[in-house]
Length: 193
Image 1 (cartoon, rainbow, N blue to C red):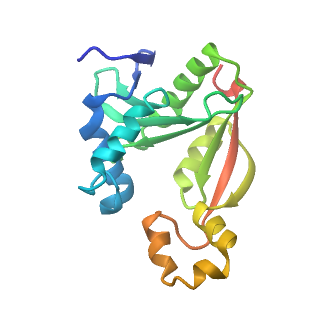
Image 2 (image 1 turned 90 degrees about the vertical axis):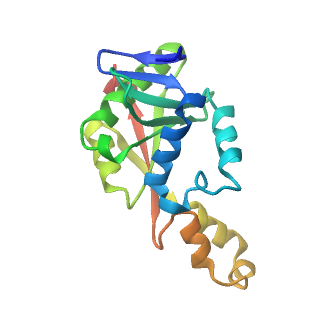
């Protein structure tokens, strides 16, 4: 394996800062998540999207098995906060194997060892029942819910946006469905220490 910046490792998994070597795997992951709507597949935006991802290499991580098989990615937002937000996406063939909970615990423990964290924030779409189940099984506690980005945008612009027409096309491009909500969860440190 190419010399990588390893963030966390145990006997089962390796978590590395994302690098150029991960491009094809990361693009495939987003194809599986967003289908043909993934901006990583659009010839006009793929290089720009990848450069943006690499510029956040301190907050985007690739997950591998101990044999260096790519599994997916973990992303963290608001790193400097005492309540950073983390999320995970896995390739289809790596789901339902306990990888998400094991790697999130490994990742969260490493972050907690390096800085003050009160708890980790997890945000999950109401239509993502599998992720909801995984995090609840890990001990995450639901602390709230909010409307999706698109729904908040529509409310913010009111009649002005409605006059543009065909809003459902934009909702589809964002990957959101009508009535979708975002659930917020709190993953306490005692769940991974």
